[in-house]
Image (cartoon, rainbow, N blue to C red; front, side, top):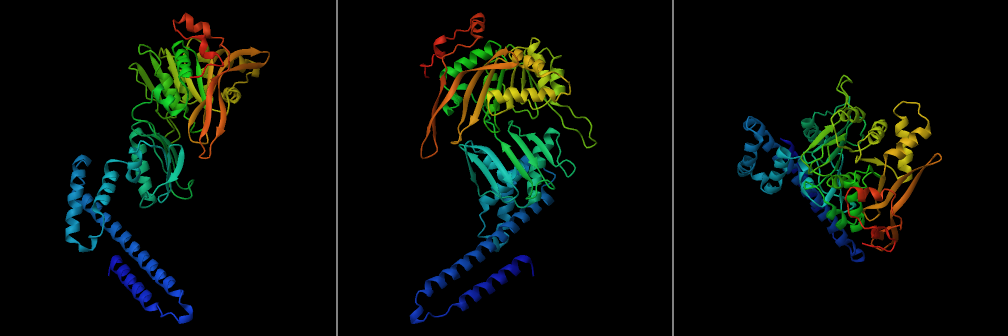
Length: 469
């Protein structure tokens, strides 16, 4: 007697027990009848659901076995059109599977074969920004800035591990007990982080930050509410005038998206070198060299850090250097590059405010291992950076630029910062929507003459505090 027969017999016993357990209500207890009937129906529904799940799983396993036995030598492209035929043949020869939704099952198998399993439909959904797999039975997504639970489930931990391997293997990364964490990327540049047992106690965990297959443009950011037209014109002028720009913000605030849009303003004839942990930037220019760091191998050798790549990029005749994220000792080399003729560089970093970004840069420079005085570090920062763009993910889920800040230089031992545009937070309505505007502070930046020398026409009127776009 197989497992399915045992469960069916058990279900019949349950059903008979439920039907025989009902007693006629007494006249003085007439309210108990509907409650008893409801209990019977609930038990019957639970039993039917359990049976359906077992049949569905067994049907799926049979299809997988047929594929492995008969079609394993064929390429995936040839196997996919045959999956439906195999399912139909098994279904016609096994009457017990007639209730199973064949189309749904076949789609799941195809997603496993050519995509990334159960999360493949989520990756194709343009409204989803982030996918969070918390073990095999719990998958969350971020949709329009809000996190919500989905009905997507994996079969077991091994199923999740297979999807992780499918993601990391093509880019030369690995994940196992000796190296249970990995940063990777999907073919479209979407960022992936995975962590497995023994570090993840509730099963393998995957976090995917999706990026649009078609890179966003500045008009998209205006439409999303990230910035307004005047700030967009100003930032375009800053990039074209070869100012060194730093995009700062918290996790998930949209720094990489903004950096990608800013990079689109770089003239196509310039040579650009991008440096990232996982290559995510989607530049439209032709003359682009993309560099990606490399973790250590299983023997602990062969690691190539962001700092190594920044040093090497200086020998590659770059006209622009773009560092995807500065988080360590590479900050010193990046600042030196900005101070030695590599103007127009772009980078991102984590911080809560422009002032906090300056403090974090000081700390990261000290991580380089040199005993430099704080004043010398601050002079390097003040001389290298021209502009800090602070980005925030607001409570309504919208990513907004909250500060556009000029780095004016040093006064004594302090780096002087001056906000050019600031987000004026007005109110939050009953639905949680944040109301406010990104307004100028009425101050013309000190580097404005550089726009004129670069032949960029930017009216000073956009800095007037009465000017709203």
